[in-house]
Amino acid sequence: MATDTETLLRTLRTGLLALVAFGCAGLGLELILLEHWEEPTQWPPLLLLTGGFLGAVALLVRPSRAAIRIFRTVMVFALLSGGVGAFYHYRAN
Image 1 (cartoon, rainbow, N blue to C red):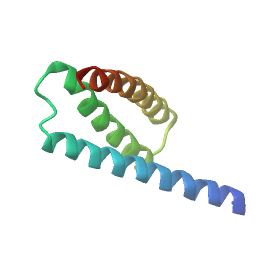
Image 2 (cartoon, one colour; image 1 turned 30 degrees about the vertical axis):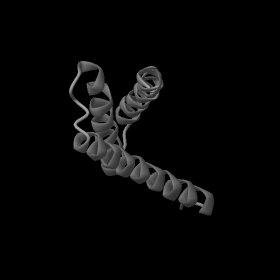
Image 3 (cartoon, helix red, strand yellow; image 1 turned 45 degrees about the vertical axis):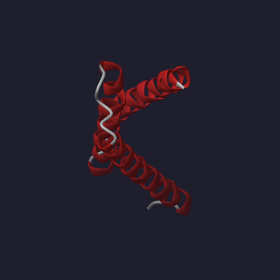
Image 4 (tube, rainbow, N blue to C red; image 1 turned 180 degrees about the horizontal axis):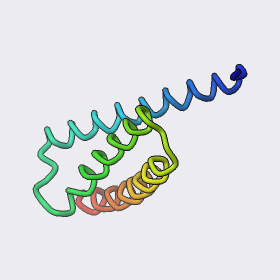
């Protein structure tokens, strides 16, 4: 039988994954509406947001070690891409 702590942690993980999926979908939609695909340097955020959304949904539906590894890898690349994107935006302004 699961303890209260395990139940709380499971609920928090599920909520955070749902929040990541919702955030990826919302930000991806925003970038699409802003036509953020004009140059090849603008594609990685769209691809990584798609990967983040699919990874979060996969973990919500059927968690596995492989899904966790893939999701973590996508999130690391998203973090790096965010830093590069901040640099490009700073340089453009």
